[in-house]
Length: 546
Ligand SMILES: NC(=O)c1ccc[n+]([C@@H]2O[C@H](COP(=O)([O-])OP(=O)(O)OC[C@H]3O[C@@H](n4cnc5c(N)ncnc54)[C@H](O)[C@@H]3O)[C@@H](O)[C@H]2O)c1
Ligand SMILES: O=C(O)C(=O)C[C@@H](O)[C@H](O)[C@H](O)COP(=O)(O)O
Image (cartoon, rainbow, N blue to C red; front, side, top):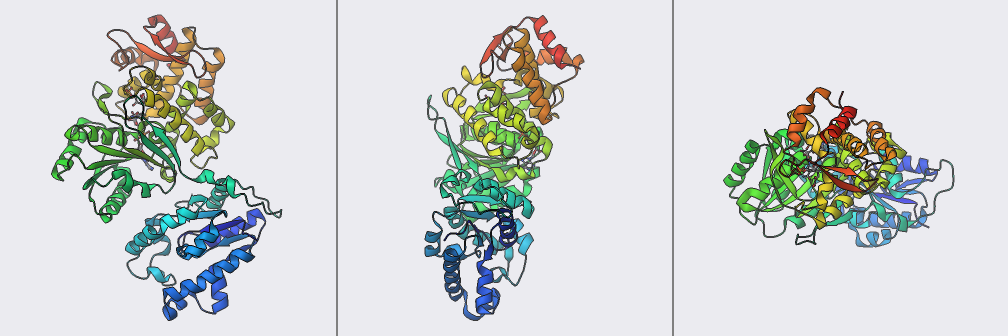
């Protein structure tokens, strides 16, 4: 007999609450090995620890866990340290195991100085950090699904576990057959970028709990690590710095302004100064954690310091995950335009931890959908189908297709930049919607979200394609429908056209006086439209301007 689901994770993560909810939803029984121990011993776990010490408790626990694994066919929750035992881990291999995770701050918030939890009686933050460090890889080793609990209600965690395991709730019904082979999907996805056309290969990882990968990416040559983060992620930046310091690096956190305010020469100079003052050498490493503005800046700082040092991107917005952090375009804005100063400098690795998206404001989340939709129109129409199947769900990280949308979009970008890193041809297709989009951003002094401007820009590009006789009506109309359905804008001020046109003339795709736009010849058939008739351009803007 095997449990349908085994729940593991640190103490206080909510295994009992979620376990009972899961059991209810699956129509099976619930059992908790900590409760078994307390009932059999007639003492609390804290009392066993105090009376006999941890080793004796672990022996009692091992026996209780092995018995429950053999007897129980419902949902089984294990104590936080049960996985420390090698035989127990071996028994769990091949079973459906869900690791409920939480970060250290959340753990301290939930359990604090709770004396009933014997391992955390003093200095809880330090103890938690050590406990997590020691156990995280063991949880991950045996887990078939990892479900983050931070900021989620027990009901949301339960649903996430069901989704991750692809289990259907069947209240009162038969428990599903365990299908261990179908649960690996929740593991980390690795997408390779580069490795062709003379560029170094690197990986984009998509999943949860990925920070354990950071040390390996930094490598053993680095002595110093600079963590560049925006104001909004001050705690994350500092926690990363502290973790890296704990691993023996001289780690500094460099806080920069949120969003586009970070992409200036002044902020880049501030970062250079911080690197200079910390004695940053060629073997040291920059880590950029944040949205696309932060990763663009961090990559640029890494590209320019000592003419180029290693950097790692930890994107925390959907837009940065699917686009900005991948592909090595780094840069800053100037008063004259968007990204006018920059360098091609690919990262050594990209860690897309989906849990980061839970704290992202909805407007920033939706802004990222513009680049996902772009990837759909230029290369992978399945993306459009997924969004159209439930546009409301696409607006939130809890939607059922979030990981697939992100991974598909990254694959589009990875394929393009792998064959044309420096934009000598094919890579221009990634600029779909950006020619007008960037002009709008500049006109708004970079106060508009990038994705919103790109959405208007894609609407314009679709109308331009249609009026130039390239794009069929159905595909052009599909632009409006899908952008509108997810809540992205389609229109901009009509009276601004002369200014926008002037800005577009210095777009990076322009050659001399020749304006160049990416348009579609059909769905997923991007092409370049050179020197369009000014009357056609104005007519296309007539559809967009209001
Ligand atoms: N290099 C490229 O290839 C490329 C591609 C696409 C876009 N970009 C650039 O990316 C930028 C836009 O990136 P963006 O949409 O990620 O915006 P952003 O970086 O401005 O982030 C949006 C806001 O969310 C905050 N934030 C980030 N992560 C958060 C989180 N997890 N929780 C709460 N708040 C969070 C940020 O501090 C910021 O205030 C633009 O500058 C654009 O030009 C670059
Ligand atoms: O990676 C690319 O190439 C792109 O064009 C992706 C765009 O989504 C992105 O906004 C990029 O920063 C634009 O680059 P730019 O060269 O037009 O500034």
